[in-house]
Image (cartoon, rainbow, N blue to C red; front, top):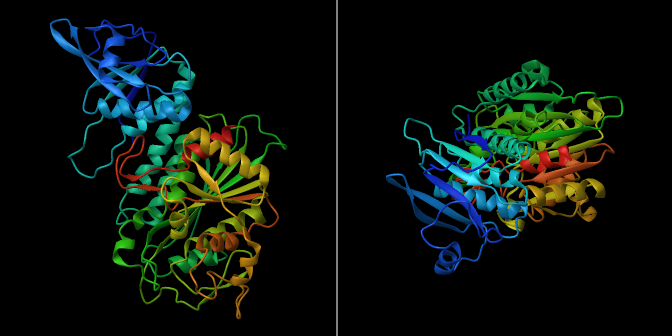
Length: 471
């Protein structure tokens, strides 16, 4: 289980809880006995009631000492409560139990998400940092609590997949985890391997230099009572289990984080695992294009011409622009074979997106205004914000090749507008369907524990897509 902390629902706070958390701000009469009036305590601490503020107060518990945590909730919006929940979990780290009185208003699911995500740990070996073992939420709506729990555990599943080192995480391993998710959550499953990958020229080309052969995975969710009019959404995720850059070799520092280059595929797998629990009213097909971009005598070369799914030929000028090659196969397959109403891909695609937007925002490109608006709104609600980026038509000519239908990067190799060029490349494979491209190269990884984020993989995009699909 990615998050070991268990959740319990209670009608009220227990009288003998060792560690109890109560909100302050609008709630100035906590249902626990404090050594001095709460207003005096808050004045002493110069408390402002902002989310993330937590003040510990010792109280009598029988013959011993208990602790009351007064926590701020800010304006009680979802982002504020998510931050408050994370602060509580970090304060309770290493404790066996934390009892939390939820605020009288606001979305308790966000409070739950923050607390659970801040409790996430990943370590290989026996030594493991212990999070709070149990969190009891008192006065909470159980349905909202469970919704927050499902979203947090799905995000943690993505984090686990992303954090797994690449000596374990081969394309075959990732496909195996997808098969387990399908079995556990009632999803249809299919995998292409070896000769079955013949039409998928991008996936084969990227993976041909590795001793670990590529895979293409499909997961299918169908809601109860689905009919002919039920909308169908395709999610496509980049599943590069390690990226050396190929013969266009990355520098050493740039390669150290490349076990996480399958973050988009992990997000798709995690979202698929939670759709039934969210009662998502749409059909969803998840596609994960899995390959290892390695170096060997059989690796693809700069100037090779490959054939993507559906027949488009591509001159590969840079083997480190490999994510768009595997995603193009997935999108072309979805357009030709699945007849979706909407297509969305998600990937750690370009360093250019990180340069443009930093590590807090994902880049969003879209051909449909309604789709773009819905995804941006879902990102704000879920605490995973995206910024709309332009599909600049004047740059499209930079993808024209002298020897093939397309080049995989700007043919002048200028390096400018790299994220836009990548999005324009993917757009070539979507047909005329509404499509959005989510570049999460910046926010997919965190260098430190911060709020609900933990050092390493973030699972960014899971909660946004769940919010979009459930809404």
